Figure 1 (tube, rainbow, N blue to C red):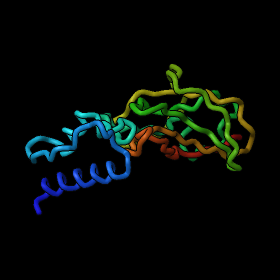
Figure 2: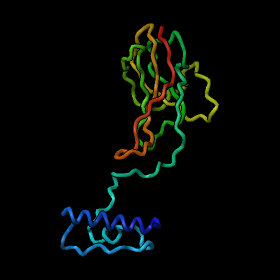
Figure 3: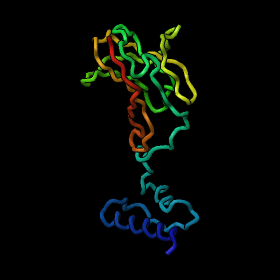
Figure 4: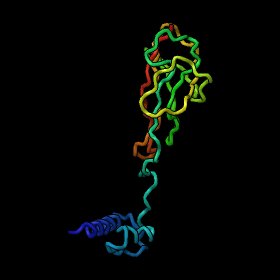
Length: 186
């Protein structure tokens, strides 16, 4: 059996099963078999209102063309020790724009306690030093995220969360967290 005929046969069989189960409009004319050249086997039935149109929430559009997003922790450099408690802001570099949702930077202690971090904004000028050596890929702009006064002699972990395309309805995107590094305060 050819594939187009199989599709037509299945759609007629499915429509007949719905009618037998009392799920169709008895005043509507019976579904005529469509030819393989007439588009979707359900096109005629959909035009008559007997088959609902596909729900837009049932599938995801293709992913948006977007540049590869990345960030790296520029200040304090990952692995730093004796970082001042009055750090004031974390400085990151890269492409933080995100088509699917917000990009956030997170700061947690070694025990897992979250530290409040402000939204990404312009980095201070001049930049604090020392800055981490940039990675081998192209650099983007510098951003800063404010942090409160930190606890002494504490290890902090920095990560960032972005929304990535998942292809899973209904939202089609979900959060993905990446580590950026850690540092220890004085």
